[in-house]
Image (cartoon, rainbow, N blue to C red; front, side, top):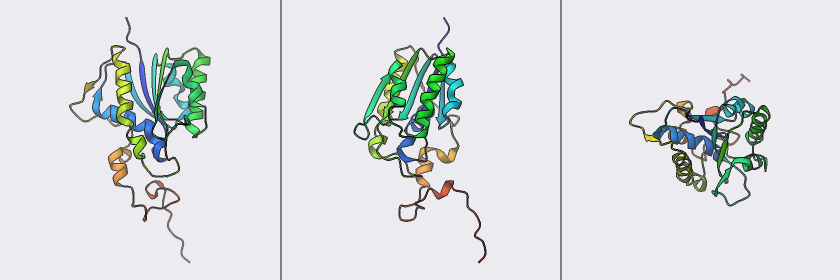
Length: 207
């Protein structure tokens, strides 16, 4: 019997506070665990429709994301299978969510659609802090979210093994959680129109 192809996908934008929840989840899984062949971890970022080919190849899809469920900030909610597209597009909290709903629709239309879908979503607290990081109620759900994913995999005979060395990064090193937060300027010094670390600097013209 052929082992299923499992895609573990984190989507969202690291630069907009709680929007980065999904990507932080797959980042932690990748740092801590090795998975058997057939299991792939992916930082989907805000790629939207460009993720369709990856979804089409998956027999089982696990998605981590910040989702506006209309619940208290930091609430973790698990959605499965046919209910997933409805929640990915229920409220337009960010552009990538609408895009991922379209990804699922295109995969279904093509006839190459995962047999199982699991959405592990958290209700965000803050989305308007450009260059900010996860707020505490959302950060507190990282570990519970990982446990949900690992238990879901274990029920299907997929066991993650603890890493004994460094993992290949899913995203550039400056965006890793610890380094990203350490480089964040103090609030009184931060450029409030964005994060100065990610805005190209133009030389000032002479008067």
